[in-house]
Image 1 (tube, one colour):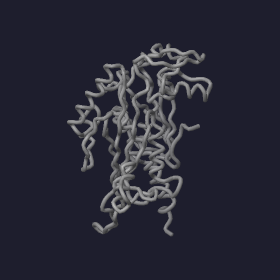
Image 2: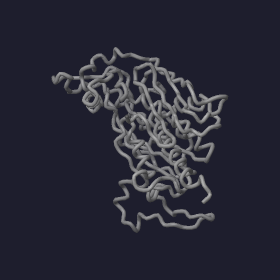
Image 3: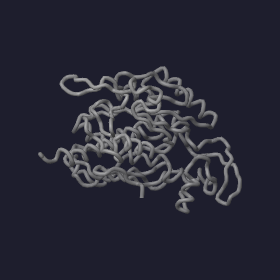
Image 4: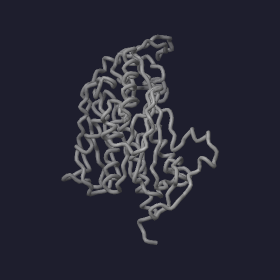
Length: 363
């Protein structure tokens, strides 16, 4: 019920923030691809807590275990089950929240839907669930990279009102990882760090925007009408905790232009059809056109903060709540690999769907 994503390449995540563990089952991965736990671990290390003083200090090693689907260092074509056991569990820090609904959190809505909830760290609503998405996305990204030469790179574009400069060239992983906030603009990165530390020291939080860019994606991926490539990318990223906005290509800024200025003119370049500009963001009519795909995702300030806030409890009484757990003052530095992961799942799924319909037979 809403825990799986994808058609031919499908991931199903499981686990709660302070349960025994979290993980993912990946179905539809092509067989015989080289895959080791290290290939997945490198991505989990980018997402894990405790990386710096601008993220949650929760101490988790996040070591992945393959339970099935891989033998002798190669995928079998059968479901790949991956598990990460939770280690640094402190449910006592959430005792006050058992009956209190944190403002802008999922406490109340989960209680209303299910009639029961796990209050420890938000349970299933915790961003720790995204660990399974990163593990599954690591597999998808590896298939795309090794099998098709597709590269996916996300980075922090803004934290609150601190905005990085526009990047013309496709960013390298090294330039993104050189910053603790994963912003390749060194000047803006320093200001972002200061802004996050300021909010953290006040017991508050801030939001930001992540941009994701994809190159090497061939034309023809995506489906007409309901399963458009942009629509599925939007669904994937908007399913992430704290995600509040999505735009592809020119997005909302495109509404300020006239069609004559916004249209991407076609030209012949190096023997194939290309576009002079790329305000479409690599997707036209819901189908990739062979240009770079790029989109932006807005993430709200983390809802769980240390400041006292007015709320109500499960008995309908007006009370005050202040979180005592370990929380990110800004989610965007750790969500960068998560955005890349869900994008990889969408792109591989559409790649497989397109091949099955349009390229499997020689008609």
